[in-house]
Image (cartoon, rainbow, N blue to C red; front, side, top):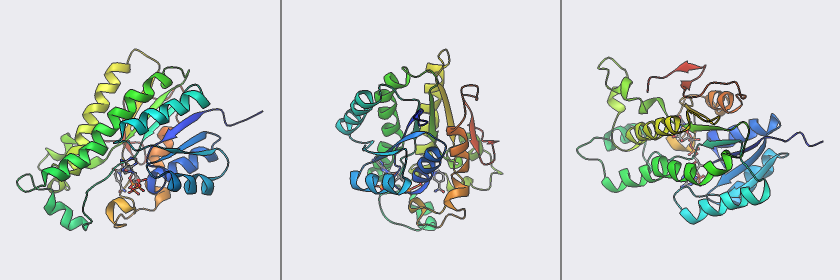
Length: 250
Ligand code: NAP
């Protein structure tokens, strides 16, 4: 009997947190669709993960790519049980974290960069949700995990005593605040269904997103995303957490 019964799709799964989540889901017996905008990178990651991992091409900013991936899932699996919206970018120009804080000032942020980051982090997630929701509705135990960030918490950033308040700006932090808003809309839309929705922040993890300036390892930094992605049918919906199951205010 095939023990890889649960079908999960992780966007941006070719590196960083997404690849770690895909790896741990596969190790827990889940069939993982390793989605990557560059199919060859997805194939390399799926090969490295091994049993239970299958590469998919999916660029969250490309409508045709999203539709083709959803159609392939419908054709090959007939449903989706878990969608991890992980793909994200923090900038369009390589900068250090310190330079990024400067580039995030409301008065000077590049509108082109704001649009590009929001296209991936906000509109990309909504487009993937819309394409895959019909497949999640065919699951008896469906869950959506949106990978956000603590820096997107409006409650925290509006508190003058919050130590990372100075980081908040229109490019990346506000894109995550908008993702949180879109996630709340998903929660409200689905609250009378069996489909669960969770928002999770990885720890400050050493990945390409932050020029590997993050302080946590991939394993530690991804742990809360993995925990939430593996929640069963009785697990909660509507949570926003970071490691270790600590609530983040929306
Ligand atoms: P990462 O290593 O840079 O990984 C980001 C992934 O997203 C890559 O696979 C990237 O693909 C993919 N991606 C970017 N644009 C895409 C698109 N248009 N379509 C499909 N995939 C796309 O960064 P990470 O740190 O693992 O980030 C994963 C998530 O965690 C993001 O949502 C990020 O905001 C969030 N997060 C990270 C941290 C942290 O400290 N690292 C903290 C809080 C939240 P390519 O390889 O092709 O670029």
